[in-house]
Length: 256
Image 1: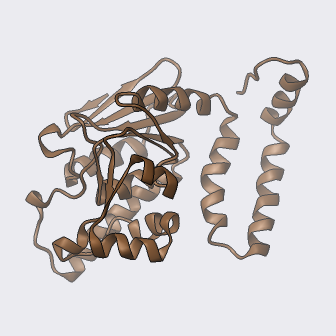
Image 2 (image 1 turned 135 degrees about the vertical axis):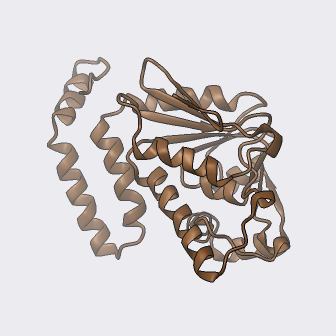
């Protein structure tokens, strides 16, 4: 399955590699590209267990394509922003683990997209930036929540006020990336991690994606109760029995 603007490659072992394909625009996020991502995550191909998301021509995603900016009134702008939120939520909470292979620009909406994914790998060329202050605008694709929770409000305010750029090493130290690798190595590592994640018990992957970010929003007591519910669901599943037997028999598990 291939959209011209979003290339989708499916492997025999259940990994879908999504390549944002706007090389002349540093993979800037247009409504068309956003819609292509949405189409995939609304109805992933059967058998997909994990996703790798990356860019092309040296860039992950340079944010909103300002050359295609449409003048909107306040209501239109809010509806457009909420549309972004819905798609980012589908990526984060759709149930498929998503690994980002990042390089070059991870800017503005590109950083909002990256922080909706679950594992992030950065090459040395990676640049993280929120330049909205220089454009006279404010983030609208979820950064105030997702990036803000990674950096903390104080650091995000400074990042937006000054337009500063973080490199790959700084991004890893701050949590914007989980791994740093050499030039040209992010995609291979992302595919390897995606295969390892896909080999987990499907229910465990699904529960981790659904529960942990939500527990962060809960009170301590509600979070602990939710943890117990998640433990009850996973630890009484057939996959839990298979995982225990595989451990005792010193073999790889064969999850359903």
